[in-house]
Length: 534
Ligand SMILES: *[C@@H]1O[C@H](CO)[C@@H](O)[C@H](O)[C@H]1NC(C)=O
Ligand SMILES: *[C@@H]1O[C@H](CO)[C@@H](O)[C@H](O)[C@H]1NC(C)=O
Image 1 (cartoon, helix red, strand yellow):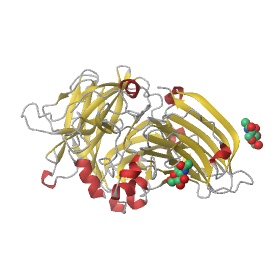
Image 2 (cartoon, helix red, strand yellow):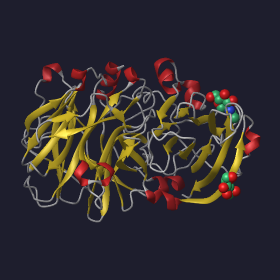
Image 3 (cartoon, protein in one colour):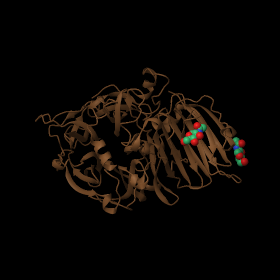
Image 4 (tube, helix red, strand yellow):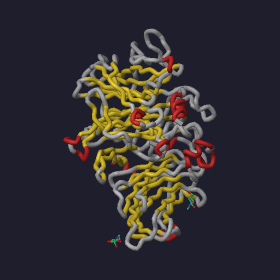
């Protein structure tokens, strides 16, 4: 599994151009037999998308890049390699597609040495001109891979991230052991204000390596964090992220968090974003406990990046992830000629939930203004017959949000509630809640297209029911279920104490929405459906 993850992730992933934002797309891309393209998620106009790159704010707008491969082909998913595609936004909800910002296959400008595809890394705004490319130059350090050898290259931009120049000293972090083709990738750079230098976290197989630099060009190794030394095997680690957050908004409880992309199959999890709280002494990260927790327990929340909320540096962050998994990324029945989407942008906080410090998250408030025509009901009985609660959803579309509160009230003898979405009577995706075990779950094993065509390990991984504990427990649960043509993201309670994100490939036109109990009855305290206004 981890070998698969390793090799798949290291395939030449994938030249490039036009990627349109979802708003634009919904209007201009001709769609065959009904819409299938997500309405409020970032997708490429054509071809392949994977890892998001941490956004930065400059020139009055947010700049997001993602890995893009214009050579991708359904019948040959390994063709070509990736590069950085650039999109901008003022609100992080509506994104304007720009162009490829960092092109693949750029050689060293002096020696001509071939350095390969452009993969994951991170960009910083160099406000102090520490690298000498100018004040407010955007400096990106990212993995280039050629012949399977991963090294870090530097590209800089003097036009706020629209175009970049390759540094003539590339690679700035040569692979220390190319004969072993060691994993050496995904540099995530941040400014360590206390130490007065830059720090890069790199994914190095089962370890995360930490490096320091004063000029972003010369890097020195400091330490490694190795969860496998304490028995935690998450396969090949990717996309590290190290940052500080104030627990419950209290600066006296400021805590370092290290997050990584990992494979949780040995722990009953899918691939996802694992994290540890701990300490950073300027050189080493020490986790508070060995067991990682997960930012999202759904199957498709990977390669996550997070970034500061400029209004609340340590109190809240934003995050976005690639919604996919290497378990099936190359075999999914992609609709049309594009493959992949990013998650919604979330706001993340660090809160004590039932005694346990937890990263909680909810989609950013900006999405709310985009949902219209709400219909609501309250105090309905839910039974095993969907006709009982008869949801007033007579205009279901492909993109909407459901907000529901369900109670196991006095006299209620049901144990589980099932929200069936994208249903046509034979196929559906289920988001449910189990009161006995205080667990939310996500079942897409009969979603339609994907569940019907995937085989073997990919199918097993796709069909697995994913669960997340609701640490708040209790007899009432609130679910916010964000549904788009191609995905579902579920958040528990007002704070998002747990979340489950996953892709779905429903059959075209399968838009039914029902609610049922497993046995007996439960109470639908409140229910609101609102569709997304493109
Ligand atoms: C729902 O039921 C509760 C408890 O019986 C009651 O307090 C509340 O007013 C009801 N809400 C509506 C909208 O009828
Ligand atoms: C939804 O799918 C499940 C299988 O996951 C099936 O048992 C159930 O009958 C389906 N319900 C509807 C309303 O389609």
